[in-house]
Length: 234
Image (cartoon, rainbow, N blue to C red):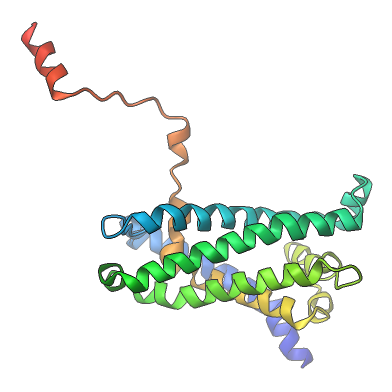
């Protein structure tokens, strides 16, 4: 069992990181124009207008919560006079609502894909594989949030977070992760699998977020009538 724990929590994260980077580079080099959402809005838009924002905004808050929970040490929140009960309540309310929103949005997107034949046929093999993994990761995360919000329950900041930060030091704290409850281990392991599948599914479109739109100049559109009047006056 000791060897298995070392393989899962001391070796696998680095292997997946190499696969994630190499796969993303390969995808950009050989399938640059395929790194899109493969939008299916033309086939169905009414449900997409609800499910899309619900899933994406919920996921953004989930990611933000993970960044704070995994990277911010407990001693820092104590120095900021944030009590343990307040931290757990915030994780339950904000993290729980974000997780439920992401799960509900994903469920609606999957229902939409199953219901509309054209959307279902447009899917690729990598996406069909990543959907159940993503759904399971989100459900396990919501369950872990509910479990960790109870007083006296497992404090992931003293276990999972310590292990996660130790990965950046290239000295994985395997016992910190091996001592976590099974639910937290499953959530973490499924998250690792998700990152392994990331470059080979539509999730890779996250790298194509059009941040340039925030700083580019305005685009001025003119109607044909305006252009005709302008040309006629010359």
